[in-house]
Length: 373
Image 1 (cartoon, helix red, strand yellow):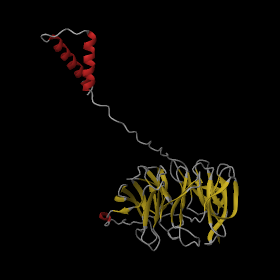
Image 2 (spheres, rainbow, N blue to C red; image 1 turned 180 degrees about the horizontal axis):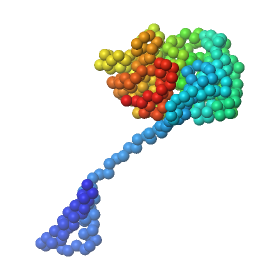
Image 3 (cartoon, helix red, strand yellow; image 1 turned 90 degrees about the vertical axis):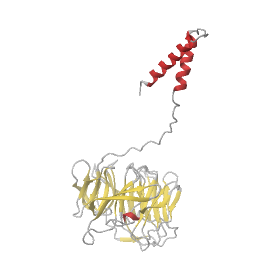
Image 4 (cartoon, helix red, strand yellow; image 1 turned 30 degrees about the vertical axis):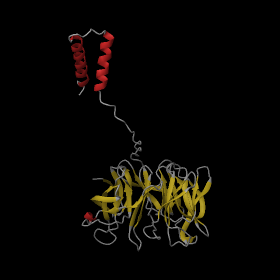
């Protein structure tokens, strides 16, 4: 390949020499020969291709330490997930309910007591809210009652929580300096924070005695701007740990409405509102044992067109583990075109190494690392 410019120069010089020796020609000076050679070379070069830069690939997190309990679970034993085999650690005291863990600051959001009473117009279970600093073993009580759920923002300093009031349920942002403001009202309890911390996805669902326009929403943390992305209504059904699932770059959010009387829906929406559609399964997959448009839980692959999911199909006896499936989607058609079952699980916990391995809850209650096919 690199010999081509030399051949072009040789050809140009030969033509120049032939022109000089042709009958009746006059001998040009050196500058004319150089100009002729340069023009010939430039004319023979291919045009410079136009380059359109692609957006930068988001940096994927590497394996990080994670402390985990079953969502809204409690006790003093918590799973330690990271390098090596998963194992349990004893906390300095028993938690009433576990809400979330922040790896950035090694702190746990929890309730000191189990939610044994209701509040708000729908009489939803509430409790207090506290922070456990795992490094020091110290605890700080933030609210004494009426908190439904709470989640960390990625910085591990700011947090979001849902507060029950007599007339509504409010989504609040509490900053590390103690600042507190309402982000949205009349929210329900299927919600999650984006990987960037810039948005929070939440639902408004019928069945909680609040005036709502049902659907999947996001609210921008910085401005409080709300956007409705879909009309999907979970109607208070599904599982207590259901949540919207985010793409790695935070541009898309997915909600599975799988436990209600209506047809199951799996909605994927761009947070700017530009692309919202229900994901369907190609009918050619209908003979697969895991074929279902319902997914209890899922994790989006970093490549954006695959996901790991668990459909609500018991393998063996009722209440047993479900298939663990790697799905491949055609994003343009919003259709799952293929799937590979690579195990079984009671639940998905989190990515171990994104795109490489995951943590699952096994049927014996242990946490196990599973590699993707």
